Length: 325
Length: 312
Image 1 (cartoon, each protein chain N blue to C red):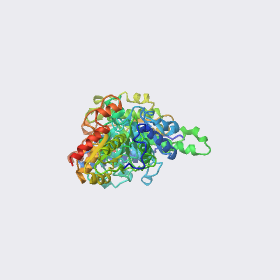
Image 2: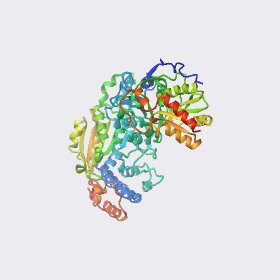
Image 3: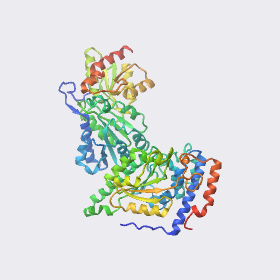
Image 4: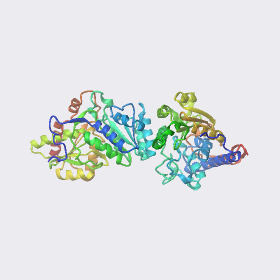
């Protein structure tokens, strides 16, 4: 049964589509109004990260760092250690990709209250090709002590996430996508960092998803339903701290699991799920994600299809997991 | 406000020079106890640290958490023995604690760190070179923002025009090594500080000409260093890093500089005060053994006229 707080039109072909990064931009402007300590930094990517919306309203709290992400991460740490709440805005391949050492030492080791926003994450970045498709960012952030890692699924959730990370004391990494993606949630959908939630209830297979691919997972659940298979779909938006309890409760019922993410299969959501299942209840797990491979240029839909991240792939993975019970 | 220069009396100068020498003795003793760590840089910077913690930075043991305290950032955190020894002499921690350097459970980590020592005036954690300067830029920016918020909130509103003659709420002092300048991140930070005319920031560079693999100009040439900073819109002051009066005067000038950030290039002798360590890059990352420490301490204690004070 579909969670009643979700967008009732989410299965329509004409479902509303908004880029998740717009949720970040709108969230920042709202935060800027509310809290005079919010700063926004960017490295020559104000518009494509949507940080320019904040820049227009609060230029005195906006820092254009130029194409220099390592310094930007450090400047953010210095601001945070002086009581500000800086949001570092760039592409996920640069923050955390190019500035990981600075994230590790200047931000996480000092437990500085820095919020790192990685835009253009995942293979759906499309035509720019492999260099700009962040498929490793979750793995390299999940391993950092003190850091919270979040992957919101749509515009609305990214907006809520932007507010939630500002409230959180301590460093946080969250990522979002470039393309317009379906609006899955509504203002009423609960969002709490560290707390996964059930989007569709089911008893035969657990599908744990994060990010915009959650929509493909929901489409897959609907396909499975036609064949009499009841899938339970979880929105595992927080990878760290990972909500082990919600996953374990679900697999206790379904006895098998599929993870779905726009990321390398190693170290991201599949990693978090496998670690949890291994510790508490080692049920069969199938993984949807990038299989140890770089991306390439192409349209987002073409790439998601080529690398097996569509609803039909999730359906096949669910059946495979069930067969292994 | 214009800061007076040469406010140091000769009497005070003599006290400070003796303190610097005591700090050198403490450095040798703590490195001997730790059995590892860096010798040359800490000895070379003892005079600058004395100037900074006794005369320049507006911080005291009693005002550790004051919101408007000056920020001191040690970007080349491997020279932290000189920081710890200075803090011990300045009354922030007991001298006996210096012997815990690098040992399990100590506040005195191998690279200075804010997590293990929240009650010491250590604003952040260092180690990987180039990271401190970026954080110092952030701290200076925060000071500017706090100051501008205050004057914006002032009902008269007229003080805004005098921004550049009124000190910011705090000044940020960042200490860096010269070998550290090989890191590209430093120059990213210098570019941003120059762009922002970040007068709230002053950097001390330990220009001792050595790094782990050899002399800086062989490993990676830095000259013409002063010109490079000027081209980034920085003010440059060059001083004898063993002349405390020069260092203090330069810092006072930097704090009152109206236009842009200042770098004080401190020409120092690595290993200063211990003959067999002076100018030897081999002593960059090495601690003395018991015999070497004995010789070093004897030199530091007997060179009285030359090292303890040149003004007595």
